[in-house]
Each structure stands twice: as C-alpha cells, then as structure tokens.
Amino acid sequence: MKSFEHLQKLASKHGFDDIRVTSSQEHGEAKRIFANWLKQSHHADMDWLARDPERRTDPVRLMPQAESILTLAVNYWREPGSLEDGQGRVALYAAGQDYHRVLERGMKALIRDLDESNGAHYRYYVDYGPVLERAFAERSGLGFIGRSANLIHPRFGTYVFIATIITDAVFPVTEPRAGTCGRCTRCLDICPTGALKSPYELDANLCISYLTIENRGPIPRHLRPLIGTWLFGCDLCQEVCPYNDKAERGVNVAIAGESIAGTRMDVAEILAIRSAEDFSKRFSRSAVKRAKREGLVRNAAVVAGNLRQPSLVPALKESCGDASPLVRGHAVWALGEYGETHFVAELRDQENDAFVLSEMDEVMGQK
Image (cartoon, rainbow, N blue to C red; front, side, top):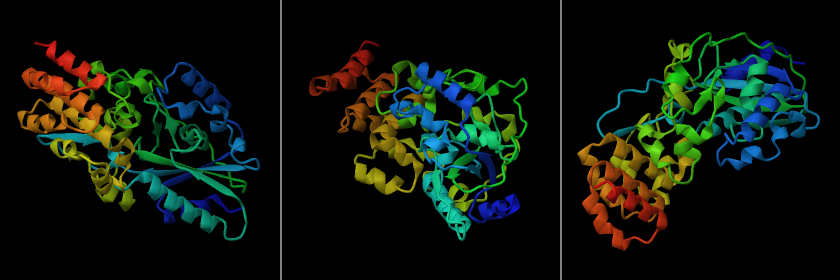
C-alpha cells in the first residue's frame, strides 16, 4: 500500500489541489437523502438521475471488487470582472477549458502512475457518472456539504471541481473534516427563484443553473425576469458564501487561467449565432457547449429582455427569424419587455408554431 503522502504528491503532479480517500462501502445516509430528493421530483426532467439510483450510493454496483474511493478537488476560482453594457454573465466554472476534459486527463495520468506495479482496476468519473460525488467527498474529508448543497473545501471554499476514482486497490482512508455553516443563511436568502427550498435542499426545477443549461425547453415565463443577466449557470449562492471571502485563484492554468467562454459574453453576439456549426466552432473546448446552440441563444434572449437596453432590440428582432421556435418564442417575450407589440403583431401571420404563437399572444395582450 502506497502512503497517503505519496498519493498527495502524485495528485498534485497531475493538476489536483487536494485528494482524500474513503472506503467503498455503501453510503446509507446519502441513499436516504437522494431517494427523498427524487421522490419530490427535485431533479426536474433529468430522468437519468432516477435510473437505478442505488448505483450512485453503492460503488460495488459499479465495481464489484471495489475497495477504495479517491476523491479529488481542483480549485477553479478566478476574478469574474465587471459587467459591461450589453453583456451577460457566465458561471466561473465554464470560463476556461471544459473541466470534464481537463480532469479526465489528470485522472488518466494519475491512474497510470498509481498502476505502475500493482495491476489494479480503476474507474473514474467527473460529474457525469452514477456517483454522488459530493457525498463521498464529504465522507472522505475533502470538505463538508453546506446549506447551499455545495461542497465547501476548508481552503478553497465552494469553487472546486470534484473528481472520483473507484478502485480495487487499497489506499489509506482519510477522516471526515469538521465544518459548519453556523447560523449563516446567505445562500438561501440571495437565491432569486427560491431554488434552495430549505438548507441543503435544492430544487432543480427552480435553479438558474438548471434552467439555463440542462433545461431543453422554454424557461417558464414567471422565472424569466429572475434569470437576471445569467447566460449560462449561476454563482449567486457561491458569491455570498463566507468561505469564499478569501478565495485564491486556481493554479490549474487550463481551468482557472485560460479564457474560452470567459465570465462575461456579449448578448448581441450570442443572439447572432445561427448555426450549430458556428456554435460548436466557438465553444467546442468549453463547458458552455452543454447548453447547445438553441439553449444558449434562448438564454441570451431572456437576458436581453431583462437588460432592457435599446441597442439589443435589432438583434432580438433578427432572432424572431431564427430556425428554432424555442429561440423565436423567447425573443418575442424579450421584445415584449421593450414594448415592441406592434412588431410582434406584424409577425403573427407568418408564424405557425404553437409555442411561439402563445408567446406572441401574451405580448400582444400587454397592450
């Protein structure tokens, strides 16, 4: 068995800021909490979360001979900068290279070093496999889960990516770290949609991150004004967390150094993306691609409606001719926020999509 110090050195060598280890035994408390969360339909339409949920809390279901779970953290904090006219915000985690690719490369390299002589088996996951990463990260001592439902690392706060490696090799188990939010409720208080229903309980149906990324359909009308200026994701609950007051910029250059999407994007430029090819060309190396073209342009229309900056009206009018009904409908809503009812009325006879027509009728009813 390699020492924990050796494990730490290898993790650091391959771009990870921290590593902890827990056993492969089933996480009973996480199983109970997750089952209750699903029962309340807080997973929205992310149906894959409900498929064989027991796999997420029992690593042996993924690897029958599993012995250890390595949980790794990468700090991704960077200075977000100021918001200029005509811009929307991007969650910090999506500013640099797609973290899935970066962490995958790091884990593959780490596994190669670990597997030089022991011939063990490894399975790795980054936010996409059937593993409750935060629950096992908490049990391993990587941090503790706060009222925002985010993992809070004692040094890096909430701005951390979590990666997980399940293996049949045996590593020294680390102890959980003590941590508490005390009486602080800033994250609950600032959430504009009320997605944080209660401490530790996040309802994805209301979460701006879900609405602007995973959601493939319309953003509910009553929630659109609450999206504010968020083009992709949301960091509000993290921005107010006291554990982030002394956040240090991440040292993994691919994640916290290089800018691809950046933390701010021009709304008119996003509205002008007309093809999946152009979208892919711009965001192929970014986590922003998760929203797909339709989703990101939909979000841009909502942000434009919330900004109420007249300079964005021409781009919104152009978006009323977009090939996607999803984009057209949200552009119509945004034009309604500018009082452009006459323009919308002129388009109505040319439209045949039921969703867009319903948005037009709502706007024209505002006269």
